[in-house]
Length: 348
Image (cartoon, rainbow, N blue to C red):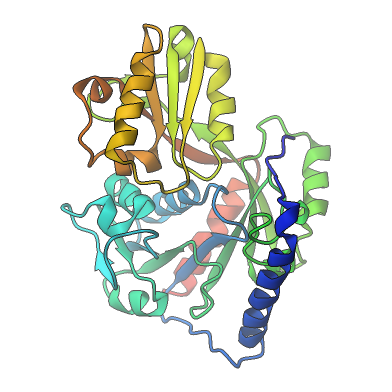
């Protein structure tokens, strides 16, 4: 199994200081000096121990699809790097700059649900009076609110027991804090996992007896034109030269997935949640034009949110495609679904 872990050993002293501060904060909540608040409606929290890259958004979308036909679903996010402040409920006129990339993506894909942003999750949940169930996006470290069901995601390609605290690694808090989760999901697993692989990963994660462990993988859907409405499969890329444009936490897996299908693949990678400047858009256009004929630009759903509002050339618009992703459970999907629906039903 491939690992994407990189540790900056020079920053380990800073990581120790950061980790100590985080543990003091968690201890204050654990002993009740800082208070956690519960809600009178079903609240499902989903998050991770690391900074980005665990496949959080497609797992939130899985929960939306599971619940939206029987419940009035709301997703509440912080709205990372948005231009607004306070509580904001998405409408058909809301932009990604106003609510952030992932909330805009979910609002765009599921206009029938409520999508809101608020840094103060307690305040935000209180404003969602019409919601019958609230999904807290990226909430594991937001301990002022205590979800009725807490889901922790762990990237199988970046096992937390091998990682280090920020800024040396990507851990937000110590791996022992997985104890707050009711459900743990090992994400981005290889599709060809054998029984021994499941056992090894179970032992590595070390779920507690009261926790249920599941395994998911990412599946890529049909590519669709960001502006032109065309569709194609990954297999259609066999004669194509591809410029992979991404501003996500872990772009390596997308590159590794597409490489076997493309005639040529080149990359332009930016930091997670990157806002593209005019000069960078010009550089993308020049980089793409320098490639051979039969070339395309492929980006992610999260990057689509930021690219949609920019002044792109007609050539880029015509050849810019988005590669959507979804999660698939490798085993026990029905058991997971039942845990979610039973919790919602009992607490409605």
